Image (cartoon, rainbow, N blue to C red; front, side):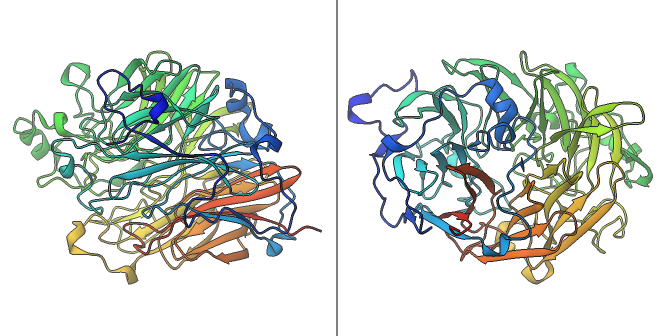
Length: 582
């Protein structure tokens, strides 16, 4: 349970109060070291902080590239490019980068948050730990706390049964907030959508969703909050009115029999690779379909990462996960059929939620090769004109590129994390019984300057084994890879000692930033992959980094707090880096 400030006890109808405004004002919290260690004179009061007005559609469309003092949405802009035009930090001076400030939240867990920055406003969400989660507004130049809201879990019958069977029982990352107007919005550990006032942290509304717990940062566009849900049978994406929280539409990733069913086309080869046999016994599956006639009712297909938005087409692009809502493939007896629309990319109308098109990467995913990493919008140079394209890394280790208008596949890249134990023998897509090798949640980046996509990836044999059986960490590894979306060529890759679950950031300074699970934050040369800089953070950095500019100074920030599966050693730090004063 969570309680509201005494002066503002106004819970929405049907909901118990679920939040507490813990601190208001510039106060350092407990071990939260909001300490400016830059050697730079920085103002320490809110009154001296330049303010950003109401967040608009134009600001979210242009994103960080339009105004480098902003990182106004999870992927930096509606297109989720994670690209920065800033050049103060570049390959020639990145070796001088060091912490400007460090803030420790005091909440341990899988710290997957990407901070949202609106000038001097930085918004951070913590993971859920022992029924507690926090939302904080920090000063982005100093790390000092402006306000902090604490959320407490409500007691819900059967809540203890919710979660992934291969993840820790208390696995509860949260990837951040969205901003629109004068509010920020987040999905909570109670499965609610919460709106808070940017200035004070006071609650504006809170509404129920279909999810018992939300882990993604929402998308906000055209007056709607669009949020993909976790641990929901038949998968779901929901949209709510940005002013009132009123529910507008729900899209289900698993269609009903009346909508065409989830059997699909009984695909025998991998879409995009007719030479790659999936090894299915279609006759037996068809015979089994009568016994599994209602299997669609308990299927997964959750869209657990932030959607992408194209304002010209009015389409929201979502990536869906595997066929089991507990993310534990395969089912005891694998379901027959293609299991549509699991392991897919789907385009939805932002106005109505109507499905415009879907593309299934891996039909009948009994492997667990279904990373729901977000799609990225970019313009692909064609023979006669530029094609509005959509690129997405995958759980099978290939970059896919589609025409985002109709879902036509344009390219399937070479494998960027080949492994020998795959059915594909290291050359084709990775299909590993009980394991995975590819991109799971980690968001990629696209640099128009370099003409490359960048991704952080993982290879984990036994990843989907039951959590109480353990895994052999010595066989797991990761890599950072650069892929050319025009040719499908893997331009470079750098292997890492452990699997990566964070994300990439590309900059006009010719750099790619990425955190390591083993507790390092790295910068690579975007063109060659050469490691240019590393900093020991003390805990695994399994979140996507950001960059922003305040008063002419470029900062790079990342959350480092370990990972419940890949590195259980915990942490709770947001670290902002900058160059020393000249």
